[in-house]
Amino acid sequence: MSNYHIKHLEEYYQVYRKSVRNPEGFWEEIAEEHFLWRKKWDNVLSWDFSKPEVKWFEGAQLNITENCIDRHLATRGEKTAILFEPNDPKEAAQHITYNELHKRVNKFANVLKAQGINKGDRVCIYLPMIPELAVSVLACARIGAIHSVVFAGFSSTALSTRINDSDCKMVLTSDGSYRGAKTIDLKGIVDEALESCPGVKNVLVAKRINSDINMVSGRDQWLQPLLDNASEHCEAEIMNAEDPLFILYTSGSTGKPKGMVHTTAGYMVYTAYTFKNVFQYRENDVYWCTADIGWITGHSYIVYGPLVNGATSVMFEGVPSYPDFGRFWDIIQKHKVNQFYTAPTAIRALAKQGAELVEKYDLSSLKVLGSVGEPINEEAWHWYNDNVGKRNSPIVDTWWQTETGGIMISPIPYSTPTKPTYATLPFIGIQPALMDENGDELKGNQVDGRLCIKFPWPSMARTIWGNHQRYKETYFSAYENKYFTGDGALRDEVGYYRITGRVDDVIIVSGHNLGTAPIEDAVNEHPAVAESAIVGFPHDVKGSALYGYVTLKDTGESRNHDNLRKEINQIITESIGPIAKLDKIQFTSGLPKTRSGKIMRRILRKIAQKDTGNLGDTSTLLNPEVVQEIMDNVL
Ligand code: WT7
Image 1 (cartoon, helix red, strand yellow):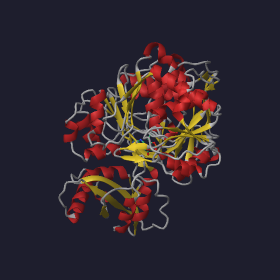
Image 2: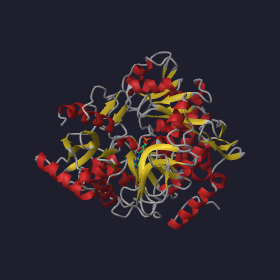
Image 3: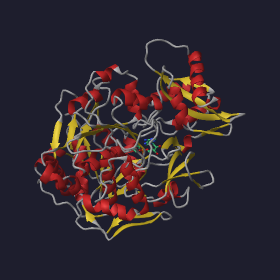
Image 4: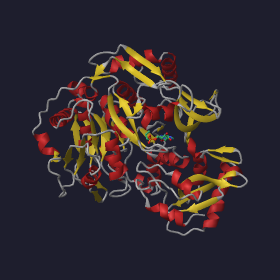
């Protein structure tokens, strides 16, 4: 019997030890018992990080959509697979059953084939969070086409770069999208992007907002009539274990975006197993991840992980602030959500609105709360725990990356005791290592270093599309025989990990290594502070000094900034020490953020360093306008 579902801490340690002592044996057992294979593997794992080359379940044949859909039809055909909650709460939610999903995916797959898409072709998906997005992802997988989903908030330039990098033949989009009270002309963005994408021959357009759009003849077609005429039977293409499943772009610190390539069997096994355990998913639970499918979180934990487990996965089209800031809580109440997975930036935005809005709703269905995307600061952690979870739903702070495919460090709820701001323990099968400046591994506990992974795991990205050399240089060259994450982390006295942030955010002040996250935690403790970001700037005596950007809560009353600065530094002194005091504190109406909600510290660092000659591309930011405001008021 394999340990597919961990239920207490002792069991976690037992299974963890087993997974590390004999990784091949462990993953073979998981793979044997819980998936549908057309042919089993000849070899569980072969790897060489110096190339790097990693192969899991080589020789196996499968189709991931048979695992996501077909396999469930006999027992869960009428169960809701995807629960679609529209932008407008007055529009009815859609319960798409496994039977229905089967038909829709097959029809879509047949349309793709009829349009000339073959196994191995790349298809770019630029769709809002509507059912067609999930269906088209699965339709590609059904026929072995490689999907490349581009988040529908990206600009036309960002879109064309990604289309060209992976030579997509086709683009799937919609006539537009809803975002709160606004509509967005997605098709217009696609038209603009395609002016520089000669390889795209076909564009299929889903109808969402019924806008009157321009259709380019010979290139653009409405999707619905094609679907109406397509057969609802489509044999799944038999894929090899290491065939690419998808490409997903992630931005590096330099250069063009990296198309991370994920393959089929290992990705399926790992996302399914992590989903089951990290969210303690039980049959009939309703699970909701608020991410967009345009990010890895949505690929792994809205679509693939949940569906392989036969789960009900909520897909939300809208934004947390529409029609008001109670929308998330309203959806949890309405659909009796059991597992809720969101990002610290959303938690902070909602916390800023006060707890009264949360209290209006019945959130008693909740069992597990998740956090992902950046370190969750202490204040946000407590707010989430107290007001959303009522101290009754464990928080799983899940650390992972686009490159890792699945969750790497996380508590297992109801097993691992949580600790604010700690992602806690490595997931089953994950072997982290902390490295010092000399490239040596730090052994033992209470150490602080650079986070690496020293053994392959099934869902790791296999390469960067079209640039294996860059893959090697970025991830496998900093430390010999290890995958380097780019993050710093510390391990406490019991072996819990706390991610301290990207290592390029580390600031050395008077020879002291200071992570920005704990300082930001301290700043955020001030009752007037909403959010903060700390960067370094050059200092004559200290080498580097700290510059803080701070946004204040909307309380309506005006505050004396000099007093606030003193109070903030007093809190830092108390929680970390005078060494971490901020030399400069600039109050601003907002912080520049990426569309996925990450604060762009790179830009803030340059402004603080008065090095604004080349800020890089700010057009893909969520709020490019704050950059000018911050530059105008720099201290
Ligand atoms: C980077 C990866 C994984 C899906 C979303 C982001 C940071 C992610 C955490 C966390 C601290 C986190 C890391 C990582 N990060 N989760 N729980 N605690 N930091 O994917 O865009 O590829 O970003 O996000 O710095 O390296 P991504």
